[in-house]
Image (cartoon, rainbow, N blue to C red; front, top):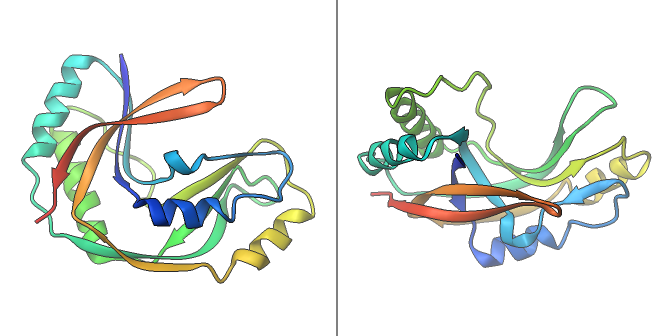
Length: 178
């Protein structure tokens, strides 16, 4: 079995800038700078043979290059129980197009459709417990985050390896954007 996802690798300067705001909240597990990325489609644990089919399907995709702008921070999770802290991405039609093409390709390989709505973001931290009164301060201090435009000329098939200190990611294949 191998755990996979399709994503965008962030340039080092963007990872460094985002990692620079990752501090000051107790009870969170920050994502290391080396692991910051944009997930286009999570795949999950699959057999290695299916991974080859996924690679073949992704190799056939044609999608244009694009630039992204990163803007603000937010959380996923209901009400007082946020579970994920993220940096936002300004809506970019070419990224949405890439997502749709990846989704179609993966469904053609036999994977079930992704039931969740695609919300482009960079995960900064996972919140283990309610972060208390410091979260609103963090949100206010970083709400004006602006980065970009950042050019992307490829997307990547990543493997994810779960460990004691959280996951680590390995680029298994990269696919050019036109």
